[in-house]
Amino acid sequence: MKTLTIVLTDGPYISEYSEIACKLAEEALKQYHVNIFLYLDAVHIPKKSQNPSFFTNVGELLTGLAEKGAVIRACARCAAARGYIAEENLENGNNCKDYHPGIRISSLYELAEMLKKSDRVISLSR
Picture 1: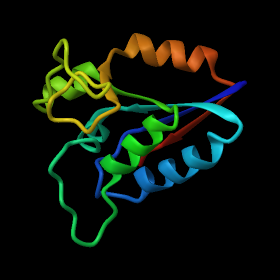
Picture 2 (picture 1 turned 90 degrees about the horizontal axis):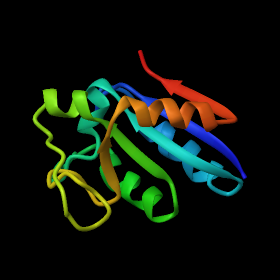
Picture 3 (picture 1 turned 90 degrees about the vertical axis):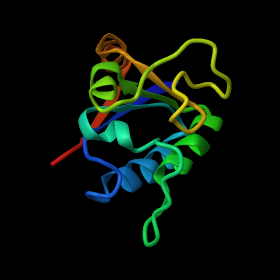
Picture 4 (picture 1 turned 120 degrees about the horizontal axis):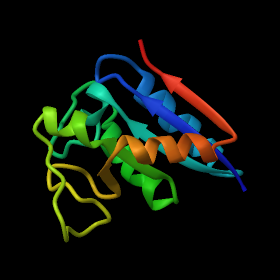
C-alpha cells in the first residue's frame, strides 16, 4: 500500500489547513497508509477540552482518523516548548494526557522516517 504523509504547522483555528488535512486524510485512507505530523503551532490541534463555537473540533477529527488507521504524531520539541509533555504508560494510544486519544508525541526522527517511506507528501503551512 502506498503512503501519504501530511505535515501541518499552523495552530487549530488560525487557518483551515487542519480541516483540509483531515478531509484529505479521510479520503486517502481508502487507498493509502496515512501519516500526519504536527509541527510548530500545529501541536495545539489535538489538545483536549478545546470547545470552538464556530469551528470544527479538529482534535476530535484526528482521533477519528487515528481510529481508522492514520498515524498521527506531534513534534516533541515543539510540544514541550508549548507545555505538552510526553509521558509513559498512558491509555488510548497516546502519550500526552493533554491530547485526544490516538495522537502521540514523537521526534523529528520519526518525521524523517515517515518522509522516507512516503510516496506522496503534502505540507500545509503559511
